[in-house]
Length: 279
Ligand code: NAD
Image 1: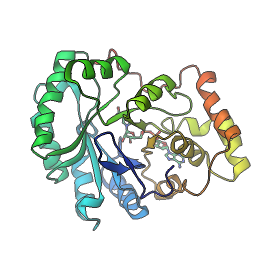
Image 2: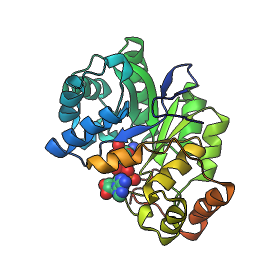
Image 3: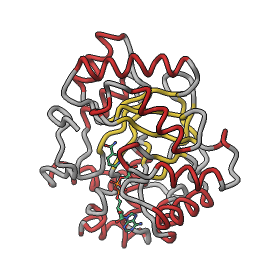
Image 4: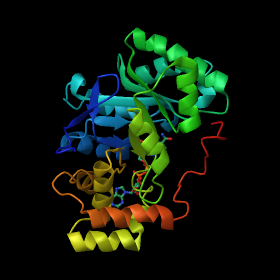
């Protein structure tokens, strides 16, 4: 169990990464710079971006000027499925924008609809990994059939799979599948994109504990062994979201949050289904 924001977890390739991170989706310019500077100041070391977010330049600028040594940062970017035909161009562009020589992890952002194209991209990126431009090659929004396919055709179990997970959409089967194969799951939308913190159930639990709803949910991710990457550009929230290492949830509290999955019907916040989303 993570004890501090600086704790790392070991991946199935033997490498390690921070167990908690900072999400950069839909953050731009001064807002992003302010939020990210505060995040780094608070100790967030895993920074999550993507070519699709159109903010890698700002992320690069802030990280370049933040005085945290490169080897202590863990920078993750992603390739969008419509670019799978030329993954090296996407990777080079992300590196240039981020002002980095290598990415700590690079993920296929969505599987897309073509097995041939995603496997082509994965194979090409394995070569870039061998050249040292990517430390860990992983995936995002891959469901069990996509992961089975990657294993059956290429013999690969990726170290990372970043998927939508939060109490109202907790994907227990996928989590179990990944746990059995030592694939580390990163929870995107860990707060239900701001929606789940508004749940009266979560608010009541939080009030009873003297914590905020966001803290209760982020602690739920930690106790589940998930890497959460909450996003906020507000400095107070950035701080609040990482004050989750000094308390535990009781079994009863975990059960109440777990139960949101069955009562919410679909807590999915993305309209995109990984089985059909072309990008
Ligand atoms: P999130 O669940 O982190 O929610 C973010 C929203 O919650 C913020 O916009 C803010 O409104 C609110 N919020 C945050 N902290 C709060 C607090 N303490 N109190 C009150 N409100 C608070 O949603 P997200 O940004 O979509 O997901 C997190 C990260 O996951 C992204 O920034 C991105 O890096 C990644 N992501 C990846 C994918 C993917 O397909 N791989 C998709 C979406 C997001």
